[in-house]
Amino acid sequence: MISREKAEKLKNDCGFDLFMEASPKNGINAQEIFIQAALLLYNDYIKNKKEESKVKNGKLQPEIKLKNEKKEFIQRKKKMCI
Image 1 (cartoon, helix red, strand yellow):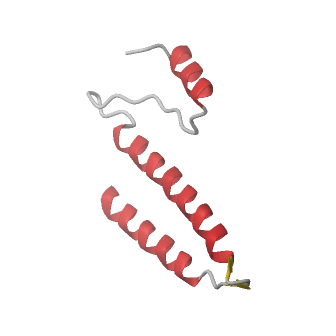
Image 2: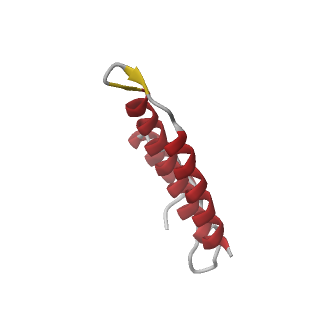
């Protein structure tokens, strides 16, 4: 276990986007931290995918596939939380 101050300093020094106190032993934020990390990764993936899909061969591309991927991700997330 480390202090909150050390954890926040590490987060800031390393440029992490997420900091949460968690205790798997007590069940505090144990599942939530993984969900939040997954959402950060997913949002970063979508952001990069949108930048790639906007222009292909000099033409704007539709983003329908991205919307479907997001819908599927949210459905999987809901199943995990049940």
